[in-house]
Amino acid sequence: MASTQNNDDFNADELVAPAWLNAEFFREVLSNHLKEPELRVLNVEMSPASAKGDHYASVMFRSKVAYETQRGKFSKSLIIKTMPEQEGHKKEMLNNSRIFETEIGMYTKALPKFEEILRQSGDDTKLCTSCLYHSLEPRQIMIFDDLVVEGYKVIRDRRPTIEELKAAYTRLAKIHAVSFKILNEVSLRNEHICRINIKSIDFFQNPEYLKEFKNGVNSLPNFLNDPFVTTGITNLLELIDTVPEFAKYKPYFKSIEKTYINQFVDIVEEYRSNRQSDGYYILCHGDFHSRNMMFKHNPISGDLEDCMLLDYQMSNVCPISVDILYSIYVLMGPDERRNHDKELINFYFNTFVETLEKIGFKGEIPNYVDFWRQLHRHKIFEMFYLNLLPMGIAAEAKEADLADMLTNSEVRKKVYFLDGFIEELKYLLPRYEKLGYFK
Image 1 (cartoon, rainbow, N blue to C red):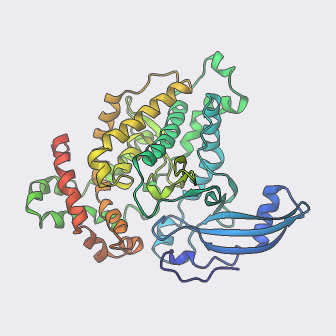
Image 2: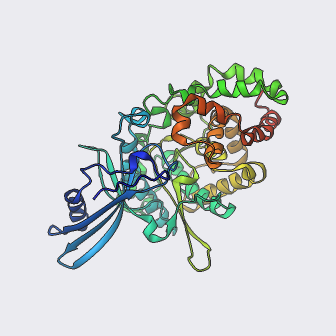
């Protein structure tokens, strides 16, 4: 029943499914979901659900389940997402975290509500795939429809095109816009209430609901103390010492070496601990990169038809800059950072504003000047994610394995000295200087 393939293309902890993912388990899941008490499972085939490097904060399997009901014989492909059971760095990082609680809330409460709000304005955008089953006890687990069956794919053999990136930013902007509206509208005018159903009224009138989403990446146990976080600036400074043209930037990075992690946390927690009167706060995705999105193309013409965002484990209410600045370093590639960053970010912001207007936001519409001012105010976020950039460059060039970079200090240090990262710094450091980041 469980796959025993030993393929280097997959994560080691996803090669063999745990014994409890068996026919009886899937019988209970499908019989409850389909409301077919007599359902009988005929066969279960298990395999890894994703490629090595696609994700880290979970273990994922694909299950092809053949089953029979009174209506006949059927098969269904499912994606199973659960917590790691093998001892090691991943389990230590994720144990006692709230990531499944967060993601279950996103898929079963927030995102369906957001879709409902969008539909009321004539927008039929689907923000997530269906979650068929979820549980926190006795195990943390979520089960989804398999989007591959519907023609969606993760991009692995190339970088996303500008069109695909804009499709992803469109989804993000709509999630941000609906949450921005909810967080900023405590009450509704009578004529608006008349146009929405009771569930939506409850959701709008209780913006405290979104405050349940308060566990960002900084809430992961041991994350802030993990060497792959704490050694970032140290490794960068060692590189700077070897490249003469970078020498003038050393005093700045030396000055933030002991404080930039705490400043990073201050930004993530700003809504809860230091809310600014002019801040733009939204429910963020939290891990907005290309492996957390799937694209559907027309099988004949190749035209892009849809984009679906995945993996909402780090979603939390925070400044609008969190997802956007993260995307510059983790979603965009070198060409996009150099030639299309403003185009893509402005496209996102236009969609964000257009969505606010379409869903009837009653407050003051955000403007470009304040939006960009907030991005610049949170410049320390750029410095934090600058130290993730070498790992992304190494993974894309297949110079190092993600798990090795996270757990092996020598491998992690080595990737800072890759030519690809040095070339990026030759662009980024002067850009920071021009923006006044080093003052």
